[in-house]
Amino acid sequence: MGTYTELIFGARLKDETPKKVINSIKKLLGEEVSNAELDENFPSKCSYLIGCSAYFGVSDPVNKFYYDSGWVLSLRFNTKNYDNEIEFFLEWIKPYIYYASGERNMYAIVISEYCTEPTIYYLNEEK
Image (cartoon, rainbow, N blue to C red; front, side):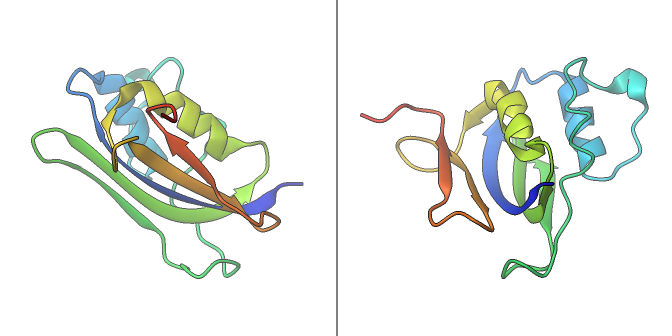
């Protein structure tokens, strides 16, 4: 049935990130993009990255995707994570992340309504 899950995400994408991946992210953020312009591995099970419910403290989604000497994606939203859509998105986007936050490059924090601790996603394995 899915649980309410919050995602906090921030990363700069690699310069060589394909245009089809960029278009796929735009589509997930609600922009009109034709299916022919999407990545072949487009996470179609992720219908959007802009939802919010009253369960978590942030009830207005944050979704910024802009170009500043490279593509930057910043998200904070929550949704019913019916079929692990958030985890699927994180797996799909990870190969395109250039860097994120801190020495280990933390790029995402995920917590659901039944978790006592968030799951933190890093590019670099623990030292």
